[in-house]
Length: 134
Image 1 (cartoon, rainbow, N blue to C red):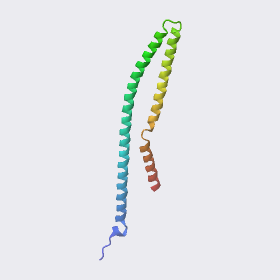
Image 2: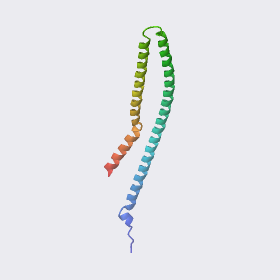
Image 3: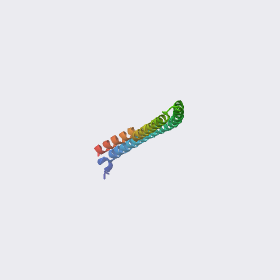
Image 4: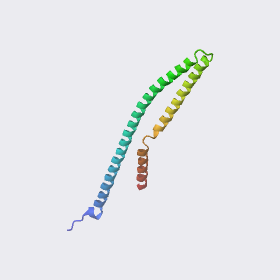
């Protein structure tokens, strides 16, 4: 009596091979996306550290410079009747500078939302491909 090879008859070996190939490709794609996310995270951390260092350095230098400039201007106008006006003008200029820095920081914080744009784009594209294949 001849024995029937059901796996060959139903082409289960070919189907299993295709599934193994799809799973291997999926695993490779996941590894690639994780590597991309790791690289972007590393670059993002480096940029943030440099930005923080430059921000602190610039802030310290700017405050010292502007304080000295303010004192110099006040000394220049000390013996004149415009002394009070000059003091108020300097105070307003400092306030405008603070508002400008605050607006810049808010703008920078909003731009930081797009930190992982490449990874997000790849994952959205992968999800579209998966949905189309289903």
